[in-house]
Amino acid sequence: MAEPSAPGTPGERLHHPQPTTLVETARLHARHRPDATAVVCEDRAVTYAQLHRESNRIAHALRAAGAVPGARVAYLGKESEDYYAILFACAKSGTVLVPVNWRLTAPEVSHILRDSGSAVLFLEEEFAPVLDRLPDGPPKTVVRLGATDGFGAWKADRPDTDPAVPATPDTPVAQLYTSGTTGLPKGVVLAHRSFFAIRDALASENLDWIDWRDGDIALVGIPGFHVGGLWWATQNFNAGATVAVLRAFAPRDAIDLIRGKGVTTACVVPAMLRMMLAEPGVTPADFTTLRKIVYGGSPISEALLEASLALFGGEFAQIYGLTETGNTAVCLPPADHVPGHPRMKAAGHPYPGVGCKVVDGDGKELPPGTVGEICLATPARMVEYWGLPDRTAETLVDGWIHTGDAGYVDDDGYVFIQDRIKDAILVAGENVYPAEIENALEGHPGVAEAVIVGAPDERWGERVHAFVVPAAGRRPTPRELHRFLVDRLASFKLPARYEFIEHVPRNPSGKILRRELRERFWTGTDRKVN
Image (cartoon, rainbow, N blue to C red; front, side, top):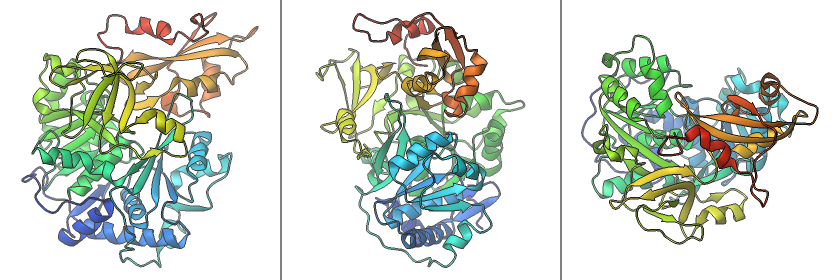
């Protein structure tokens, strides 16, 4: 096992050769920095040479299992050195990694496995009980990580030579599932270029809004099934930095990792900053090595920013984007993180080479300062929604991603988010869509109709609020409804509060007036997102 790079001493900005695919990333660093630490997880460290050889073995084993180029390979588990070895193995074998949110219920997991047509499932032993509850059964090949006769035996006899399956920047490499207005998650297909385009954009203008330096040790606070977590990890692998892995975020564990390993950069959501701030006994001395925090998933409040600047020190950069844009397309640079400055309410400025426009309901571009739907044109954008050409055509129009976010662009090109068009609720950086929860709730015999909205929440950004019309002669309790949903929906989708109403407000054409129900929670705020 390798020793991590010297803590807290990041060097100059990188000048060594830059890869253009994840296949090249693995080869490059195995050749030029074989003994440098690639991954630190708990008490284990893996070098770039070890990561390269291990991913080669897995790639050969995938091919032997019948996973041809283009086949989908699912992973259900938490982050570890194994997860990243599997990521690179998929890249090298030409297969597509499908990370599955381990917080999902068995029916939700089953939909992703069925929709993706995953040929192989890598399954951490902690989540093995889900196999027996999958309505459609598991994929043909299940490789159990942590089982005595599982992962190690499956790849034991495979060579550690490079499989040499060709890959280009446009070759699909990951498929991430994001909820939608229909209630069924959609598979967003991302190519290798999604994990390189923004790095190249920053380098083209010599910008250090987000930068990677020799000797960096990067904390990945966002889960790897989320585009933010996967993107941040790959950026640091591409740069040859050390990726410090939390199996799952807990504030004390994150603080101990930052201090103990000398973490220099981190990517988190604002709720994680708030949790670390609230941890008993935490002081600025815990974060002396931390030079930059990248955060996204939701805006940061001025009060949280001021407290974070005082405790963490270093620089802050906000990123905004979608899974469909390949993660970040807009950045609020460190120089704009000035408490009280009007730009603190902005999502940021598009990167060089990223287009931004605001359109009305007919697709007509609007002038600066006018609120409409934000559209982004980025070289990191998705390939497609897997198996959904009509939905792809709705979202990706002439190279522009229609975000579903309402906002405006000012005269200096800064993007301001005001509201959401597609009703998404952001719970600790996770997109939650009302339709999925409403459909589940209306399966309860005591519910005639349900409407879900987002309400502001100090800790999580937003919370799920359920309006429920009881069925005739029935009056379910919130406890009954919670118990009904707990096996059907992931915990972050569960309503925090239930409110019983006699009828759902509708306009003359019968459309639910969701904004009317939502409005009272946001009265007095200058934007309808938190």
